[in-house]
Each structure stands twice: as structure tokens, then as C-alpha cells.
Image (cartoon, rainbow, N blue to C red):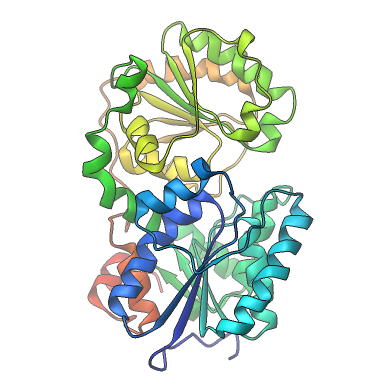
Length: 383
């Protein structure tokens, strides 16, 4: 198969799905479910690389999302980027050789995605990249390298926003490989919305809906140096007017001295999928460095403030929900004035094709129904 051709389903096939970190599960769960429903006679195989190995960061997501038990657990665990990537490559190769899939689907931009893409292409196996075309244009971020490599080697590029199409075309990738399907992460959110909206997890912390700031910070650039202490100092100040709820990522927790925190800053354990969506839905606003949280808050119409210089999800900024603060924790002080300024402004609607049906459009493409009406309606003029 040349790079200008698109993958086509010849009949009953073997499809292998790879997940590694908790955002992967949210993106892949609806795709796995839809393809299993649409193609029950195919051989479906799920591989969990174990890049996230803590039960609160991994297994609880599989349970809540209804993802079937993985057929393979690679147990890669935490390590440097090189070691983690090498372990994944070493452990996925015999799986691919044994299973002989016709198509491998990888999501997102973690090291597992990079590793599996490299092994699959060397074995001559067709690759599909879910959430293709996202670019921060910052190659100091490991995720940016992972995205670029996965896109270069994928026969099927599933994108969720128009600028991703522009990015892929600018890199010379053939338009027939590009499919605007929408955001499968939002499919999971929509499917769970009735359940998480009735939870009101914030009540267990003694807080009311709409009266706290939800915080997630985990990227090394923020938590591995002096910026974290400044961020905590600013959160202390904000918490005097707006309580702070901070589900703490393990790498962040190890670097926090509780003695320096205000009693209005609530540090809690990493939340499961439904619990975290409940905390998001009931928050006044969100402060984050997470790409997935930027997307979920955009769908929910919540103000989001991102402690990064750039975002690979600019649609969240242009939609009006997300504000980039840069790598400047001092700008956390801008959150309260910004919320006061927004007071009474109705939230914008979600971006095009963030509608809970993206996984159906992925299945349309895999099954060869690219011209289905549901896909044409979503693409809005894009190839």
C-alpha cells in the first residue's frame, strides 16, 4: 500500500486497538464499542501498554467506560521517554507478529502511540491515528514529536477540528488519508452525561456548584521546578475568594508541601472519569495544563485557563472558552477578574462535530462508507 492510497476493508478483518494512558481510554472506548457493534465478525484485540499503571490512573477508567478487559497487558510502567518507548516497542512487536492485524488504531500523542506506530509500519501493518493533525508547533514537547511521527506513518488520519486538516496538508500528507470525524473524547462525555451530572462530587468537599476553581497540573515543565511553588502561592490567594479543588496527579503530589497550602485549597486523590467530569461540570472555572481538559471544558461551556505558552487545540481558544496564560503562574491572579468580566455571558456552543457521534464516523471510514450522509454533514466542506 502506498502512502497515497487509503485503507479499505476487504471483508472480515483483524483490528487491534492500543491504549496506554488515561486520556487514550476516553478517546478509544466509543470507537472500540462502535466497531465491535458494526463489525461483529471481525477479530478485535485490545492492548493496554501500561504506560499509566496506577489503578486510579488506569483501571478505574476502563471499568467506568465499559471497555472490555485488555487481551494483552504489556506492563511498560514509568521510565524516561527513551526507555518507555523502547519497552513498548519490544513488547508490542511479538503481539503484532502473533495477532497479524489488518489495522492498528492508536490514539493521541503519548509514548505508546509513537512506539506502536514505529513497530507497525516496520511490519507493514496499516495504521490509523485517532486525533491526528494536532500541532502546538513546539518541538521541545515530547508529545509533539509523537504526533508528527504517528501522522506520517498512518494510512487513516482521523481529525477532530479544521485546523488539524490544515496542519496535515501543510506537511504534505495526501488529503485522501485525512478524515474529519469529530471528537471521540466528547462521545464518551455525552454517553456519560446523565450519570456524572447527578453525582455532585463537590458536595462531599462541602462546596456548592459554581463556587470553586478546579485545578489539574501535571506537565514536567510546570511541576518539576520552581513554577509549581509560584502556582501554589497564587492558588492560595485565589482560594480566599474562590475555593480550589485540586485532584493531584502522582508526579505533582510528590512535589507539594501541604504546610504551604491554604485550608481553602482542597488536595484530593486523582478522580475517576465520572467523578472528574462531575467536578468539571459543577466548577465555576478550570485551571489546567491538560489537553483533554481543555476539550471537555469547551464542550461543557466552562471558562478554562491554561498554564501553557501554546495549545495543540486552538479550537478551544477560538471557541471562546479557553484562555492561554502562558507559563506564568503569576497570571493565575487574572482568573478572578476574568470570571467577573464574563459574568452573565452565555457559553458558546461546542465546535463542529463535537456531537457524540464521532465514533460512528470513524466506523464509517473503516467500513468503507466514507460517503455516508452522517460523515458528509460533519465535514462541512472538508475532504
